Image (tube, rainbow, N blue to C red):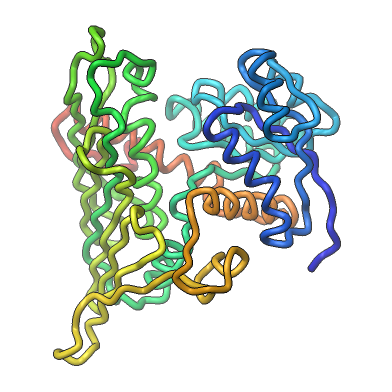
Length: 369
C-alpha cells in the first residue's frame, strides 16, 4: 500500500446523496486502503440549520449555508457536488477556477449548455473530474463490461436497457419533481441507463424517441415534465437497441436492467438482484445450453475489499464507496477515471437528441447535437 496522505473534502449538499457521499468518503480508506484518505472538512447546505445538522451527523469539521465559502476554504482540496442540478455548473466552475478536483452528481447541470460549460471549465483547469454514475459500478456490471470488451459475446447485435421505478405513482401529491424538464424522468432517472448503454456498448449513432407525461395533473397542479421515455437506438458499433425509462412503472423498485445479445453469447442483469449476472454461452453443448447465474464474488471487480465470501453480496452504499475510490484514484494518479465530465456530456447529448426526435417525430443523428 502506498504511503497514506490526507485530502480535505468539501461536499455541497447534505440530503440523500450528500449523506451517501459523506458515508462513502469516511469509509473508502479502510475499505480500499487508498493512498489518499478523505478528511471531512466542510459541508454546505441550503440553510445554516440544515448545514449544521449535517455537519453533526456526518462528522464534518465545519458547516456553511454558502457553497462559495466551501469552495474558497483553504483546507478544502477536492469537492463533491451533491446539490440540485441547477447549482452544478456554478459550483463546478468555481471549484475548477480554484484548481480543485470535482466529482459531480449526474447528469451535470440542467441543460446541454450547462454540461458543455462544465466540460470546458474542467478541461481548461486540468483538474481531475468525474460524474457520479454509481449503478454501473456494481461488481456484476463491471464484470459484464469486461465480458463485452473481451469479446466473450462475439459481435454484439442487440442491447435492451431500462431504468424503471414506481416512486411517482402517487398522483395526489404536488411536488417540485413534477416541474421543469430537469426533474422529469428523462432528466433525472433515465440518464443512468443512458450511461449504462454508453459504458457497455459505446457511442450512440442515432435515435428515435418518444417522451410521455402519463399523469398530466398531480395534487391539483399541472405537470410540466415527463413520466417516461422510450427510444430506439443505433449504436456506432452497428448494433441495434432499445432504451426505456419510467418513474411510474408499477411494481418496479430498482429496475435498472439490461440485456446484451451477441453472436457468441448473451448476458442479462437486473439491479433488483444486483449481485447476480446471467450469462449464456453459445459454445456450450446443446444439452447444456441455457442462461447460468453467476453470483458476484471476490473474483469480480471491486468485490473483495468488501467481503471474502462469494454470494454474500454488496449493496447500494458500496457502489458509492467504489465511486469514491475511483475519484481518489483519479486525483492520486492524475489519470482520468471514467466517466469524466466529457464522458458525462454524451448522456446530455442523448437527452437533447431525444427531445429533438420527440418533437420532430423522426430519427436524430447524434452528430447533429
